[in-house]
Length: 233
Ligand SMILES: NC(=O)c1ccc[n+]([C@@H]2O[C@H](COP(=O)([O-])OP(=O)(O)OC[C@H]3O[C@@H](n4cnc5c(N)ncnc54)[C@H](OP(=O)(O)O)[C@@H]3O)[C@@H](O)[C@H]2O)c1
Image 1 (spheres, rainbow, N blue to C red):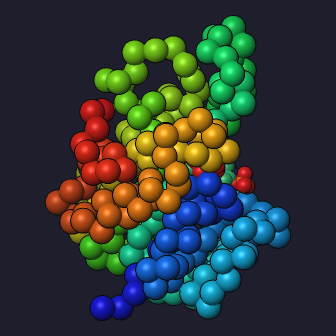
Image 2: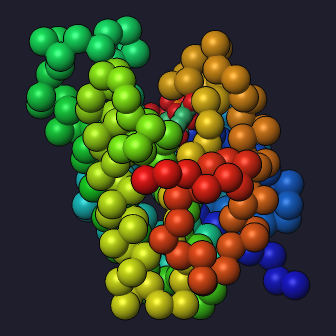
């Protein structure tokens, strides 16, 4: 079987970096996209002739268009797009105080976590192989059903928006033959998840890759957890 070609955003650290590591270990060809390749030292250390590190800021349409050119020059098609890049405001890590919420920064969170993921998906849609997968890394905080607290207004709402964007994309005729899903990685030990988190990146990403491997076009539009459990919207 031909090795898969995978594009991963937010690949400089955390969950994205672990996706790159595991995909390379599986023999896949990886386009690892990050905002600042020159300072992505841990990514560069994974050096392989199957690793292509490319600049991509998911909140910048011009940057996405340039990334498309770079990828297109090196491959005709992608099997998997992993929309992983995401931000959580430091304020929201320490406070759930509505009075402290900065609305300008809230919009920036939406730009990266929701709009950016859809912009990347739209740009690369024409490059997706039949049977290909677009997996966007969401959060349990994006579930309206599970959201019975007032933490992380901006982050949670941005992930709910991401979920809706991807649910709509899953039902768009443009993605016929593809599988579009959102995946909750669990609570993971990264800069965002902090050291208090339950899961190592390796466990979460290993689980998510098993989920991605199992997907068929008929699974399009699903919201799944890292271990394959169905998540409530
Ligand atoms: N960790 C958890 O417990 C957890 C739980 C649920 C969901 N998630 C989701 O999982 C994904 C990865 O999170 P993580 O824990 O690995 O976070 P992280 O350690 O903070 O890493 C975030 C990654 O996103 C990149 N990024 C941020 N803004 C970007 C932009 N505008 N364009 C391109 N890349 C950008 C960062 O790049 P720089 O290095 O350039 O900043 C970094 O590579 C996110 O979508 C997050 O919401 C995480």
